[in-house]
Image 1 (cartoon, helix red, strand yellow):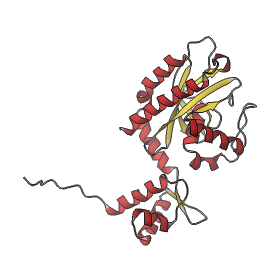
Image 2 (tube, rainbow, N blue to C red):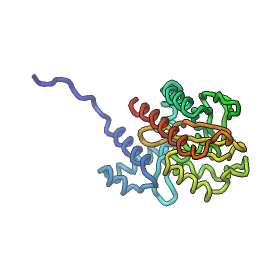
Image 3 (spheres, rainbow, N blue to C red):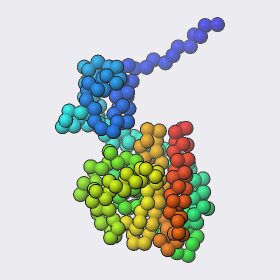
Length: 255
């Protein structure tokens, strides 16, 4: 029998605009009108008109070299979506796993401008422990959860750190040369390591929780006093955090 069900109508202009936004959001650098139109098989005039609309709405930025790039407004929309997905509930099993495996304090954090906000935690039961309150904050460039989010979003967020690499201990990364190297190492191994950069002798590990497009919207972390870190345990804890954060990211991708 013939299928009488009609496919839903798709607005052509909206779909093309979203295609441009997705194209720019996944790009590592700005793109010109010609490149975008060629990649998406659109006319230059249509591409230019849609870019002007996206720029006016704040989703796209027009650079001095006449290229275009996605702004963080797209990330902000994703952040609002994640807030509605109840991250605490999604990440609870992975936080419990990290607590059992490490015995140390476990945090769930989300970015807020150039800081991270701790939205959930499981306290360590050890006599000497790390401690931060739920609702507390820390600079992105100083702690494991923050550095994990920063590394995942580094190309978009690096310029925002100009003049904001504040020193908190003698280990804080206060130059872009230091930070660039640390971000590259973090990206390569899949987790961040804070060597006491926010609080003296307090170490922390972090790994990003990402949306399907790779944008980090949160992070899981483990924090502990340096006296609690067993010999050769750095890689083990880092890998545990990376595995746990990847598991939460997978849940987000499944909706």
